[in-house]
Amino acid sequence: MAAGLIDFLPANIAQIIRGLDNYLAEELIEIRLRVNQPLQIITHYHDYFLNKNGQRVEKPEDGYIVSEKDLERAFLILTRNSLYAIERQLVEGFITIPGGHRVGFTGQAIMENGELKTIKNINSLNYRLTREMIGIAEGVIDKIYDSENDYIYNTLIISPPICGKTTLLRDLIRLISQGVPEIGLRGRKIAVVDERSEIAGAYNGIAQNRIGNRTDLLDNCPKARGMLILIRSMSPEVLAVDEIGREEDVRALEEAINAGVSLLATVHGRDIDSVKRRPSIRHLIDSNLFQRYIILSRKKGIGTIEGVKDNQGKEVV
View 1 (cartoon, rainbow, N blue to C red):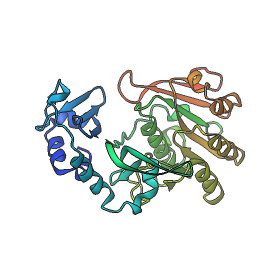
View 2 (view 1 turned 60 degrees about the vertical axis):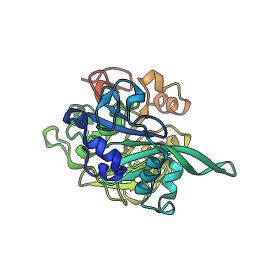
View 3 (view 1 turned 90 degrees about the vertical axis):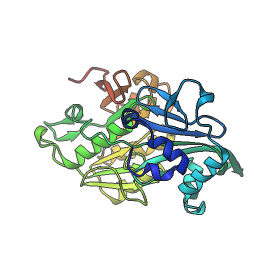
């Protein structure tokens, strides 16, 4: 079980999760609590409902049924009885806990002047585990580095949800920050905008994941604004962001390019063609802003690298 996560579950549900066999515990990705629904876990390959003994059950009605009281207890633990202290995270729909794990939630949206003010009457919690995979980027780092010109190519990681894009991005950040002497890559100053606290898994602003010795982290900040802050204040050689897509993201990325900064970014999609259906991303691709594309899937497990392509769509070998 991932360190620290168990302490943020209600005691009875924590006991159920402790009852998982070692295989399931190692494969665990998400723990789902929904009011009046069976306790569910998600692993790398399957999802299961659990009974009160932590055993898998075939029929949902045989599982442990999560109560309103369970959700109330869980949310009090997560907020440490202080909703005010995590006001922005409530609007974003997630809370980050020690270890870099993230807990998403749904409930009743409260609007004010057309804007989401907060979410109350929580009806669902998703405990999403952060698992570092040190070394996962070693097979692609040489494909995004121009050793002749000592240059990191502007790189876009394309991946469907839960296919390892953030995990790969994190390890690329670590490698670039530390340097890879075997391929002649010296360590670079790298700045990270971590809008949803997923890359560094920061808790109280301090990275819980290994992101390298030359890495500057701006946590819990909107991407577009954060990129401009870091360009102007931290003189990065490389800038990394997760899940681009909005028009303001595109403008900030273009400013970074004009400032001579190399880019690492991720986006949801199956391949280059699917990503190009989004107008803002299409502009970036058509303008050849990115020189490398890493395509991920889950065909052979999370983080399966389908290929690395250049800006002409050719496979990089």
